[in-house]
Image (cartoon, rainbow, N blue to C red):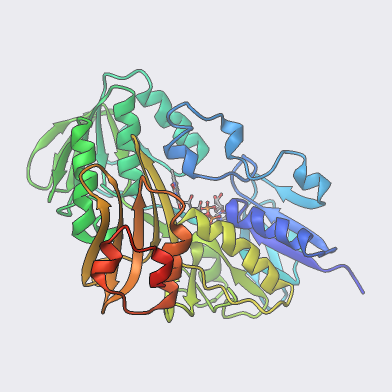
Length: 408
Ligand SMILES: Cc1cc2nc3c(=O)[nH]c(=O)nc-3n(C[C@H](O)[C@H](O)[C@H](O)COP(=O)(O)OP(=O)(O)OC[C@H]3O[C@@H](n4cnc5c(N)ncnc54)[C@H](O)[C@@H]3O)c2cc1C
């Protein structure tokens, strides 16, 4: 029988972890990992934290040692994209025009930053953050301090880069149309904690306001807000969310709607094509609906799950969405989904003021999400509570003397 070929489009965390799992599971066929970035696969969280702050070496972010790919007979093609898919012929064509026949194909093409399309958006000094090169350029712009930095978007990327910019001694203003930071991720209640944190560190928050345009002659010099204010700026960072990279899937006629639609085994509408990571909008049986998760842990676990499904194993991918962030001296982990409309109550255990607490989002008396702030080793318990789907007594949930494990 001829050797089977598995192609992975996208050489980042989901793609690299899928390749690793194929080998771990004993797949002896050809594995081709194709990535359009020059860099070998790397993780992105350090790009807005340790690497941006110059506290972490570039190499620490790589998923594997440089020689891992050869050692495991994984053909890594960097600086190359998968240009098209011919599903009928079971063939992809690379940007080098090379056709490659595949038996199974994994789409791990991730996501790209949403662009601000406003007047002046092509001026110099406006940064987006997705790649290592973006992070290096931003570090260079921030590292000398004393610059006026405006951050568009008070989401995770916006807040983490604001913290980094302040650490370097820059003036920082964050602009966001919502009334609280992180509004889309966790509703209004907890946003105040992050607003206070940033204000205490000298960040100016312009909430309920948006970016309407940029001024400057070649180089950005001010941000014009929708409220009509003009905020002086030497450096602008835009962090207004991402869009899944679905072009390949769309052109191949796969089902796409806010990501590539996949079932609980991460299989697309074509039985030989799978999708994982930021690009996948996957049916999660635990939540009873599809969800597209833009977090590191979903790439870390989704890539391997897809690899096992590609090998014909019975896979049910039902991970609870999990995210972490570090800003100044605040570290947090969040599990579950706490977007506005997903919950009706927030319960706190611990001290919000000293920023050492766990927040629980409840819907109909059941925990749907939890966030531990400067409290550690509770993620397992928080996720068990979410998974149990049982009504909990809010008073006991709030009481630190009641072990969380007792409530699940
Ligand atoms: C600055 C930053 C900080 C973050 N911090 C955190 C954090 O603290 N916690 C957390 O949980 N998450 C964090 N994330 C999110 C996390 O990094 C992503 O969820 C994760 O990178 C998704 O991995 P992925 O492999 O699915 O996709 P990606 O990392 O987007 O990788 C996809 C790769 O595929 C390539 N590609 C696209 N199309 C093609 C094609 N046709 N052919 C070949 N290659 C292609 C892309 O260029 C890219 O290299 C952060 C993200 C960023 C940008």
